[in-house]
Length: 289
Image (cartoon, rainbow, N blue to C red; front, side):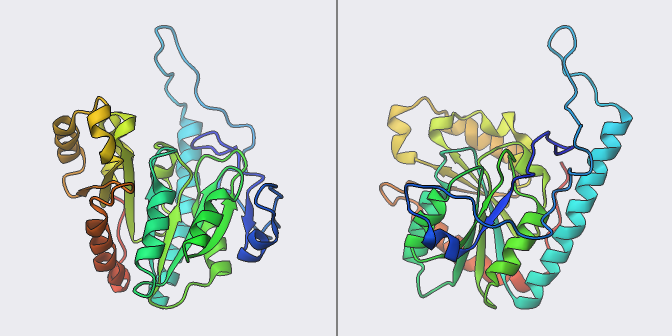
């Protein structure tokens, strides 16, 4: 059990491109486990989240839980720092792409792979609890891809990504996109060694997500409002959303796009191609939470 969020990734499986090719699209088979794969929380399998007290308030964590969380994150951050140095040596730019399920991460990667073919060498690390469905979609769009199935784990961590990167062996000067597990909570806590963080937020989710999940948005370098073609059909207060973003993540860039109509996609491609050479710059630091 993960001491920070309570998830378990004991069954996390790394699927190499060859594994994906051997699988029949309609039948999922676990790939080979990467030897030495470890999860920061495996040392303490019995940890549970604090419960609730009268009135529905969350009980404060005891000092042992806080100490364990710090240990878990410290171990993760050490691996992330080593990954960041490894990527910098190779001139590889890695992006951590995060959102809730269904916000459009995979669709955006499909368009990106096809549109930037020949301009950027793009490799993708796909994170999902089960299946390789998204990995196959991204592979069909022309990207090299490796799948991480986390089992019950609700986020990727630095050890998983480090193992995937070494199997993927990205070319110097290339772009690696980590499509994190769909979740607006735990992925925000785990540094993966990325150079930038991108958070997608679909208009169908409502305009309140930045204030409900501030840590996720506060850590973002780029925030992308997706599915804007549906704005006429949903109750979404754009002015409120933009004001909340300005207050929570004032240094983040905000883009609005629709993968269906293509609106805003050129701005995304411009941001991505401009950001990619930043792999040679000093490492980013996690923003204060």
